[in-house]
Amino acid sequence: MRRVVALSLAFLVALLPVVRAAGPDDVWDIGNQNEIIDIMETPQLAPGESGELVFNISNPYGHPMDNVVLNVSIYRYATIEETAPLDSTWGWSFPKIVSASPSCNWRECRVLMGGAQGHLGINATDEYIVQRLTIATSKDMPHGSVFAQSSYFIRFWLEFTFDNGTGSSSYVMASRGYFTDEQWTEATTTLGLGCGPYNSTNRCLGNVNLTRLGVDGVLPDTAFGVKEPIPIWPFYGLLVMTGLFLVLAFLFWVEENPGRYPRTERTWLTFKGRLRRLVRSPLRKKV
Image (cartoon, rainbow, N blue to C red; front, side):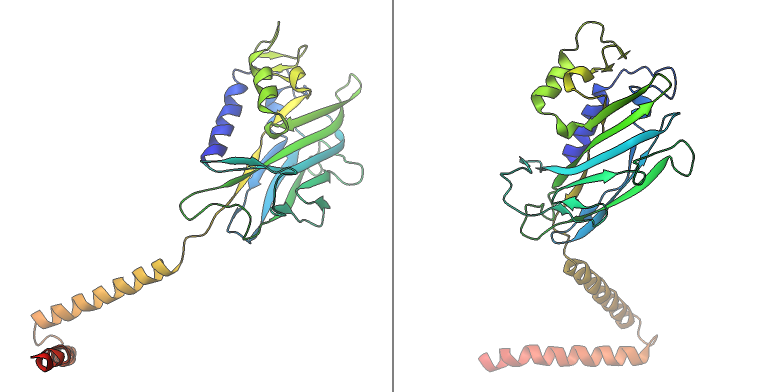
């Protein structure tokens, strides 16, 4: 998961320093954008298992969000040593999102939020929705070992319309996974004139030029892990050995303190005598 941490830190650094906008109706305010998607649970799976990705999508603005559509897709595999895109060159049918509702196409889901009208209001009853997507894996797909973590990255693409009193407009927000390294580098190094900590005219957030990315906001990626589980038998073996040494410690204590537990002492000495005879018998025959 080191790559996940590194990407998350890079994302936060790219958006700093950021000055919050004036109020809760500014679409480009990073404070509002950070509240739209809240990852609640990401699965850590063994090969062949299934688990749920659970996230909360919220309306952080003072006016309703309409025609809200969210795309969720698995797009990259990564370990410490290697990385590979999940595109047409990916040779496995897993991992995939298998949730029946919403309907998903292999590794991508198009989620219409807030019912048939795609509406997220401003009241406590309709300003957020908890979404659960089931992710399935297979035993033959690439995965981590017992001592090496592997991750599959998930990206988000959000579309909605919003009217903050100046007229209804359409907006698009996307996570880092939708941009190539070249696009991201250009957007974070070639900011252009007037791009400060926050500049709504040039659509700049911190050190990210949204105009060059072609979106109205940057959402966070997330990831889930797949690796071989730690075998159980060493744990049980350790328990058995611990119990055996505890019993032997007690028996040696009984032997060193005669008369405390006479029945246990007789049984233990009888066992030791028989064990000695069994060991000495093959030696005598050889002589």
